[in-house]
Length: 263
Image: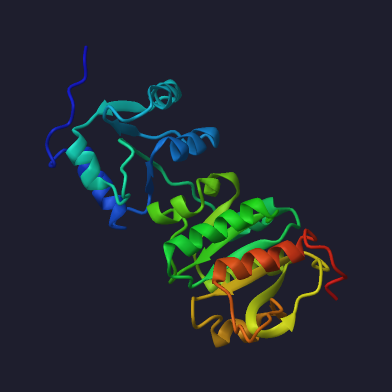
């Protein structure tokens, strides 16, 4: 039996998608386009449903259906109304949001650095930090309460889907992070423009904390961190974009930039 396309904005699936995009539903996430859908499927995250029009690749729809997702055609104007892309992809999926706690992240990290977003507000920056964590050898990523969610649509795009490739905790309490790090034997280091220049790999397991754009780390984190580190800069440049700073520091901490010991 042929499935009839969705043609009403009052459809329950469209209402559910709007709730996720508005941040009212934190238990699920939206995947727009073939790439994000495939990243989710590769990680074992099966969408509840996939809405599509004629622009969607047939192969992506077949893979979603084979995994157990319901595949439903939808009027193009309704799909485009749910998109925040300049060029909508004609494919939108709703999936359960993976959930991890800070203790779980540290347990899986196995001694590799853990990247922590402490109040980073811009979803694109959070997504870029997740991509940095995934690409530069971090063992996991933690986003504290008060910042953008790594599972928001813009953050997922900023991470290019790599959010599915490592354990991610969101809306974590600062006290919970501190306790989880201590229990796992991780030191807390903070990225700070006034910190000491970072010269080389980490001396042991650590969590690197990056603060809000512009303001940086708050006073609580400045006093809680065992060490404040900075990227050495030239030509009077005071700071870097938070994701850029995170990439340089994490590459140094994991030894990808070479250099001497971290002390």
